Image (cartoon, rainbow, N blue to C red; front, side):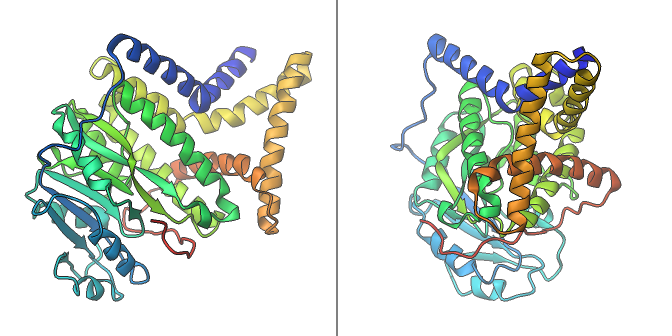
Length: 394
């Protein structure tokens, strides 16, 4: 029982903190041996690029998105803009059609985001394709900062950074901004060591020649598209200076809905990317993939529960002050999370408690998402989380 307890506790620690420590050490070793990886300069002949925005019923924000898109910097004559609005039943297609600089692809049927993207990709001829969401806003130099990495022939995809607008973060999701700051640090180190494991749909790009269509029922299409490129032996680079800003979820219920969907997509992705679990074919990528994604999306949330149960059982049978200390630490942490939940329901503002609350909510979402996936209840069609209302941050 004690062996299982320590193993469970170790995996939980490694998943959320230990991997970051190991990753940092490996990056420092790599720098000492080979020097720091440097991004290509901006004084180059940039590739042709198509920016694809998939939008579903976004009339409240689409014109602001269009204005943001038209302000993006990229060499003249090398940028194409394509909006896909399949299934939109509001004024989104009408509003997009007012701009002659933008190509609009629209069909009345709603078949899901990924089929809309596949349809758009059949029309794209540029060397690089950038994908971004309709409810996110890019910084002016995002496209050039992303495109410069394709000067390296080993790069097959480039992911930008997701930023949660700090002045618009709801009290209920205050942990979201903290979580993404930590994730951004891990992604920087992942990218420098070898490759990021998956790209965020808010802003990512691929070489057009490497794009492979994923299954129509794919939940995390951005993750699967980028990892299928990694399977071909190419690196996924992280470019934190190219970022997509978005509003936080309207409340914790909306954020939970989004996290459950991601968790269902995570277990689906693991089932479809089984070859990446083998270190023989992909030694470094497999290590990063299992450490950064697979553990989070599979066993770790269950081991969090098991470690508490085993800790209580050990204390009840054999005691020992050290096990008592660990148990008190676990109970204190979950007590903070519970207090955050209580205060959120009462709309009381104590943001410090929302970090443990958000952490526990994320892990609950994994368990719920796994259940939803195996029950076949998760659709791949657009299912937007409601966002806070605020002016976009530029």
